[in-house]
Image 1 (cartoon, rainbow, N blue to C red):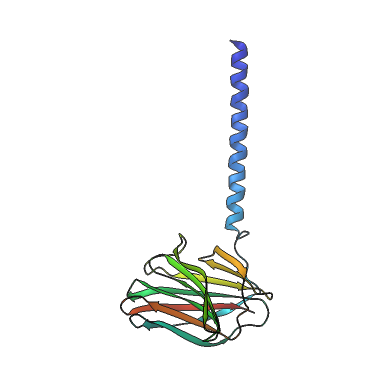
Image 2 (tube, helix red, strand yellow):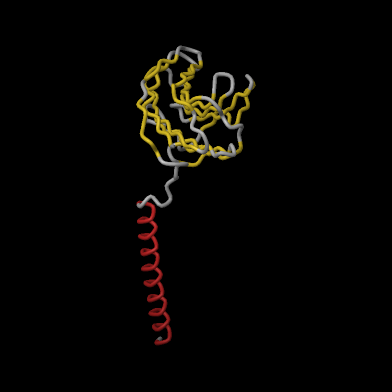
Length: 198
């Protein structure tokens, strides 16, 4: 009986120590996450935001809106914040890099889908076909599309700060643009702001 009692006490102490260590480790992890230690880091320093405005996407069309914003030289990051505003929900909106005939595009849909493609000399290379992804916000909730472009052409895509894809692409040259597409009736996209690094 005494031996069993001793074993129970030893087990109880070990359990208390384990619980204290577990709680301490959890508190440290929460503090590190809240400090932003694990947040994605841009390529360079954010240099401010450019306000954008809503755009109408006519029924069954894809519209490209090129900004008077040249792509930075060297490595850079771009971050678009936009949201579905009105009309057709079977639609998409996103960020373009390049020019009319040679560009890279990342788009999301208010239905929870995303699409990544690159056009070179009028030939389309689908990097990620339209597919659902849990981090795409639905409906009128704003989505953030974050692209990191390294000098060697390595592209990293994040949607709402969650890593989506990394790979080598032909480095886009030209301008920053916006894209909107409706697969049904007219849609309105609230392009809100564009952040870039320098």
